[in-house]
Image 1 (cartoon, rainbow, N blue to C red):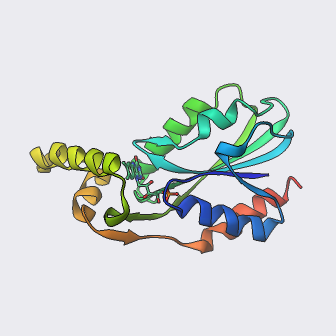
Image 2: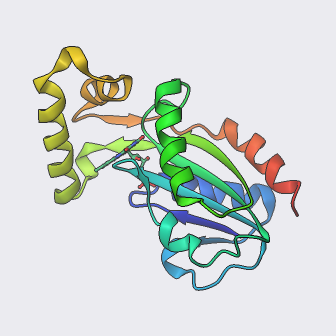
Length: 171
Ligand SMILES: Cc1cc2nc3c(=O)[nH]c(=O)nc-3n(C[C@H](O)[C@H](O)[C@H](O)COP(=O)(O)O)c2cc1C
């Protein structure tokens, strides 16, 4: 099965597309109460460094008998090593005890016009913090400052081919 954690739709759209490509059923993480062992795919949006819904979903996974495929959906560029390492570390922290997994990274959409009040406030605080020391920001923070307040769309379905091929090895 494919499970997704999405607040504004990017991770859901990727999950649905991957569902069409693989024939696997697709569910939001909020509806999950059990997961069959074998293969489980989790597509989750990144919020403040964590993957939305991942921790809760992993409680339902049989660690020893399931191959997990985790796909993160964020705005930072995973081609930049510093970003990729940060995301991987955050995900791997949640995966202790899992025998077998792959991690992939995709990019989504960030539309400030659609953000909830809470998310807008979080971004405003982060912007204030990054702006205080513009000479010392990371690659991720630099990109954040450049795109602050805008609508950016990095959705790219071409990477799904590789992910679906990996999934097909287990079904
Ligand atoms: C409050 C907030 C925190 C975010 N934190 C991160 C982050 O830590 N890393 C990242 O790459 N993207 C981050 N993003 C961008 C989202 O991951 C991106 O917009 C993603 O496409 C959202 O997926 P969704 O549409 O499925 O909810 C953040 C966005 C918001 C609003």
